[in-house]
Length: 164
Ligand SMILES: [Zn+2]
Image 1: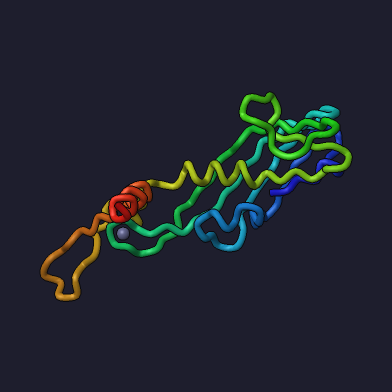
Image 2 (image 1 turned 180 degrees about the horizontal axis):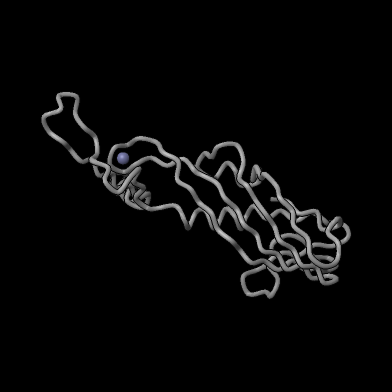
């Protein structure tokens, strides 16, 4: 979601946007079209207090049956946007504001906080359903559970071993 702070007036306002998260899209799992965003904003001069609600669904692969399924992610975040000359974009972790903007940089791209939230919400071991029985062989006699434990760190370690 991109907020145009120049058009946000004093007091209370609500902005709805179907966000394509263009700036972080390539690093996220595929999602269907857009993410629904709603920003409830209270502006007091140079300070904008934003409640950001987003809802979307991201493609995941079930760790048991290996089928793709849509995993819903929705959160409400509280953000502070502050106008300050010479500063724009996302603030550091230890600052009181989350984003800065100024007269030369009025649009604030909130995609990076949505990205962080999505990545921490996605399960390490996605399951299409708690009762997923896993891959069922074509002969139907035996039910077999395929547990796919994928941890990129192991892959890196294995590569190191091979290279030695
Ligand atoms: Zn499954």
